[in-house]
Image (cartoon, rainbow, N blue to C red):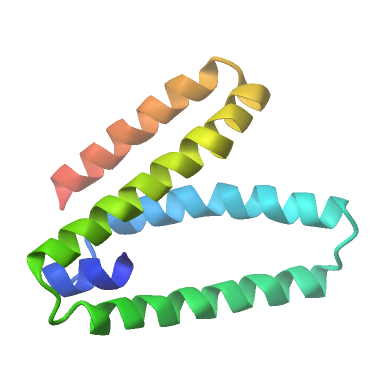
Length: 124
C-alpha cells in the first residue's frame, strides 16, 4: 500500500507516515518481548526484523512499479482489500488483546489515536 500511495500522490503524507510508525512500533515491541520471553536470542530477533524491513521496502517498490499502469478499478479493489485485511487483523487480534491488557482505556486510546491522525492530516 505504501507503493500505491507513492504512485497516487507522488509522496507520502505526514499523517500516513506517522500512522505507520505509531502503529508498528508498539506492535514490534510487543512481538519482540514475546519472542525474547520464549527463548529467541537477540541476534535472531534483530535478523528477523531486518529481513522484515528489507521485504517491506522491496514490496513498496514493487507496489509502486506494479500500479503505474493499473486501472482505477484495480487500484480501488486493492485499497478496499487492504483496508478489509487491516480491519480483520484489528478485530481478530489487536483489539481483543488491547482490551485484555488495557481494559476500557483501550477504546479511549484508540479513539485518541484516530483524533491525532486526523489532526496530523489537517496539518499536511
